[in-house]
Every structure is written in C-alpha cells, then in structure tokens.
Length: 553
Ligand SMILES: Cc1ncc(C[n+]2csc(CCOP(=O)(O)OP(=O)(O)O)c2C)c(N)n1
Image 1 (cartoon, protein in one colour):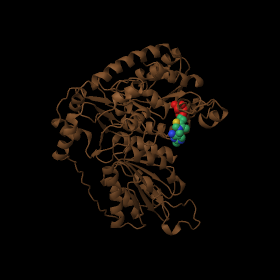
Image 2 (tube, protein in one colour):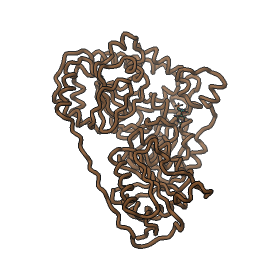
Image 3 (cartoon, helix red, strand yellow):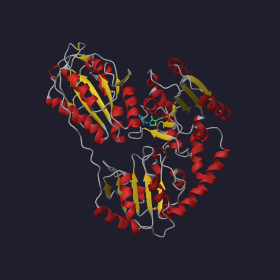
Image 4 (cartoon, protein in one colour):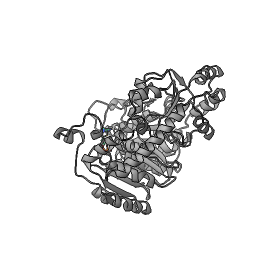
C-alpha cells in the first residue's frame, strides 16, 4: 500500500475508511497532495477528479442526494475552498450529508504574506454543522474532531468542514501506516413519540373536519403504502404534494398552483384547514405559502427528526420523528369524522383538470407547451433532475408518472449547480437520468460538463427562452431595457459549441413537430450524453402561462 507520509493525512483517510465513506471528489492542488495520494491509492474509495470546486461540490451533493451517505470533497488551500460554499449551503438547507476536507497552511503561515492562503478555519460557520479545525500533528484530539465531523454529517444530515494544515514536503509516501486512529462510534437513536404526546394531538385530530397535509421535498419510497392509503381514504384529509415530493396517490392533489391560484377570498376561507401537517423539505409553491400565511390554520405540526421551520408563521408543534414512524403510531389513535373536505377539492381538481386540457390543447409552442410534451415523454423508472426556477414551476403543472424520481436543488434554489448535481446524481443512481434546465442556469454551470464521469445515457433538455424566463412571470415585470439587460439578462447564446467541446450529441427543436421527433431521437441515443435544446418564444411564454391561471375556472 501507498500512504502519504504526513500522519495527519493518514488519520483523516483511515477514519473516513472506518466510517464507511466511499466517494471522494478531488480538485487539484499541491497543499492537498497528502490527501490525494492517500485517497487515490486506497482501493476502498471511488475517487473522482473535478477541477472546478463549485462543480465538484455540487457533483458530490448529487451523489449524497442519491446515496443518502456522506460524500467527501477535497481541495487545496486558498480561494478553492470558498467555491464549495454554494453547494455547502444547499446541503445545509436540503439536509444532505457533505464533508468538506480542505488542506491548509499551518496557522503560523496565515496572514503573513504566504501565497494561496486565506483564513480557512470556520469559513462556513453560518451553515456548518461542525467545524473540525485540526492542528498539524496527528493526535487523539484531532482524531476525535475528525470522528465528530463525520458522525455529525451522518446523524444530523448536513454539511461539515474539516480543515487540515499540512507543511511541506507534501508528496512523500510510506508503505506502512504511522498512526493508529481512534474511532468513536455514534449511536443512531430511533426516536419514539410518547403515548401522551400522541393522545393529546390525536384528540385534536379527531375533532377536526379540515386537515391539510402538505408534503415538501421528499425522497422517493420513504412513506409506507399503508400510511398513504390511510390518509388517502380519510374524508377529512386533503393531501397536497409537489413534483419533488415523490409521493403519489390518485386522490392526492399534485398540482397545487393549478388548484388554488383561481380561488376567490371566500374559496380560500373555505379551504383554510383546522390542522396543517407538513413533512419533507422545502415547498416550491409560492402560492400555497402565501395562502397558509394569510389563512393560518389553528394547528401546524411539522414532522422531522431534526428540524421544523415555521414557514407559515403558525407552527404549533414539532414531532421529532420520521414521518413513517409518526404516522404508524399516530394513525392508530385516530377515528373517522364526517367531512366533505376531501370530496370538495377532488371535485375542484376534476374541474381544473378539464380546463387544463382544454387550455393546453389550444396554446401555441412555448415553454408550457414544451413541458406538456416533455414530462409524459420521460422514460418510466428514470430520474428527473430539474433546475431553478421556472423549470421546476412548469414541471409542477404537469402530471408525472409515479415511477419517475424527481429532484431539484430547492434548499437555496440556486441556479449555480443544477447540472453538476444532476450529473453526480446520475453517476450514483445509475438510473437513466434527464435534466431539464433553463438556459441561464445551464450556461452558469456549464463547467459541470467538464468531467469524465457523465454517463453515456445522461440527457439534458435545455429550455432556451433567451434569458431568465422566471422574471417575466414574477410580478414587477415591465418590458424595458433595464429589465432585459439586468433581470432577464437576455442573450443569443446556445449550447451548440459547449456540446461539441464536451462530446455531447446535440439536437434542437423550435416547434411541436420538431420537439416530438427530437425527443424520440434523444431517448434512443445511449452511446453518448446528449443535449436537446428547445427554443421557445421569449415574449410569449409568460403571457401563455399567466392566461392559463385565468382560464382554470
Ligand atoms: C446562484 C443564483 N444566482 C441568481 C439567482 C436568481 N435567479 C433565479 S432564477 C434566475 C434565472 C434563471 O433563468 P433560466 O435558467 O434561463 O431559467 P428560466 O427561469 O428561464 O426557466 C436567476 C438569475 C439564483 N437563484 N441563484
């Protein structure tokens, strides 16, 4: 075996090994040479080389999003580390385990004029679940900090930072380990809810005729079928899901904006629930947030082992359990109550579905039309990754096959890493993966394509509406030069040259007929990754979408 000579690097690698860490994304540098040498020469690790640290961290995030296990990113000293911050913040808000290991100069070399040196300790302080600021020598104290960082990423599901100072020489190797690391185990406590707690809340539940369950971002296959059935069959329960909820039942309302946008004040008032139960991560729909903030339920209970955000300003209880455990215990104490809450909104959903079909049948080629064609064309049992911002909002409006797993970086809703995340996720998941991206987000993260790991069957459907289409939809849009240059950032760029440079097959479509045949070609191509770029009419898209909400009643 080849080990780095520096004992601290040996300790880091041995503790990662003992903790079952598998995937290491490495960006080049010299200060991190001891770590690179150690990880790459160990057969237990899958090492990936990605130059751009921002892309590397999102790629790692994509792997961790799929494996639900901590993924490590390793970089050199200096500004390299700061490029991890967007993915670090996304990991924090999306509860994804990410371990940053940065190489550093010893503290005596900071702020004395040494090259490629910045203040690295605690640099992610505001979003880090633990900072292991190591000292230069291998020691029990350092071992414990490394253990704690990795354990925290596992148990608290989020990002941690290990900062490791190394002094030159950096490239020397040895064939035997000099360290005998200490491994501290972590206890995985399965949280139980007390019977008293359950009874108190079941009593409220049993008296309420209007219960709304709103599911945020949720990993596929997390909720037991019996729980889904039980909630779906309760007359007093409306379950609202989003595309990123990965939760399906014919009675669940999966197109929130379509259902609620046309509501009058009276209809909102009627819809106002007595109890709101939420689980999962971030909610995409702005409209449901606005509704629940104005028409606050008497009770809002959030279910999550770790966190509960007071998203609607009315949080009354946090059940610290996973949703399966909670519902399995809780539903045993509930009794049916006569209510027309569910049936009322089933009827409205049926009306909206009819109006939706009528409207889509008559609209011209546009972003909305493209989504109407793309979503049903996606292969069954595939993974869909979606970029921010209008892409995920359009995707929410179209029914999707329940076998398709959907992901979007909604922790911070950034446009800076959707492609890198999607590629990392595709590498980890091995399912056929399609990314639907907007042009600005795609161009922003074009370095994502700069890697050797993109699966041959990976596909990007790029909706090129000539700029940030979302800004046309948001209130405040006015057709002025300032809007075009500084909000929409309109452009005439295409992905053609990027596709050529990175060895992607490239297709285009700018009308419905082209789109249908291009989609067929796209799915048939599995010998190299592909991009299908769809050009839509910049100045029509927003009008077509806004008119949709007017015609739903
Ligand atoms: C890193 C980052 N910078 C800026 C934003 C603000 N922002 C949100 S959406 C958007 C434009 C996205 O345009 P595009 O990718 O073309 O998608 P479209 O809205 O047209 O679907 C911008 C700049 C952001 N979310 N993240």
